[in-house]
Amino acid sequence: MKKIIDLLRKGLLQNIIIGIYFSTLLGECYCLYYRYYFTRIYTRPTLLPILFLVFLQQFISRNHLYLLGAMAAACMGDYLTISYSALYQWTGLGCYGLSFLLLSLQFFQFEYFSFKTSKVAILIGIIGLLAYFGVMEYFASSHNLTLNKKPLTYLYATAMAIFAVSIFNALINNMITGFKFALVALILLIIANLLFDTSLYYFHRKQTWIDCVSAFCYGVYQFILVKGVLRSKDKIMGTEYFKQI
Image (cartoon, rainbow, N blue to C red; front, side, top):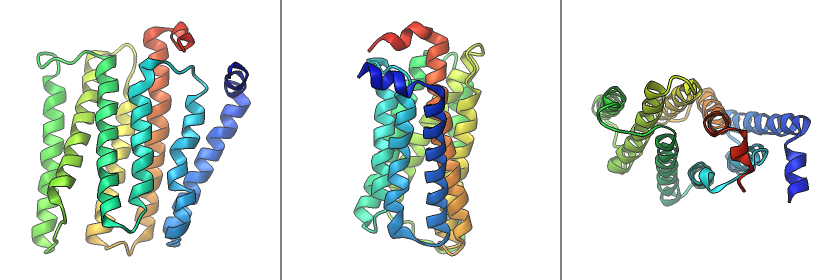
């Protein structure tokens, strides 16, 4: 096991894995653009397992469990949401929501949360959530859309809002470590979701280039987040932290 980890930590192999990750992501965009939806089983669900190989370049300890759990939940979401079964798709949405909650716990672990020091973070999260609700309700009324299982969609948005609060909590209360990567990742995640909703509810999946941009933003979000969290752990706890197996 130690020899495998030593091999994975080498810079050349790391770059190869990252290259494979982004090649797979581009393959996912290609499948979306040309509507090769059946082929997506070889692209979308394999993104996070490939990214996990980059994760293995750091030693894994029990302190990584939130991030690992979030990656596993998101990977399951990737697999379920490409299905044509409505039940699978909504279950996949729940998996994404679970991944946001686990990532929130990861960031709350970085920086202690209290209402006294996190009022701005809470305010940003609430404003963002209300804005999402407002936009969805506007489209539902102005375009005569019937949003199936709307409560589940709003629960998903609430989980994302909690994730946003955890990021802003860490960003505002810890200027030294540098959590700007998480803010960039959050912006990409929001863009990916807005584009997906626009493609689904407004263009009815007729503009496949929107799906491509959404998928690419989501893939880059995952990459920046995982790499950033690992680097932040290294800064906060020191390089000796990764020797705890």
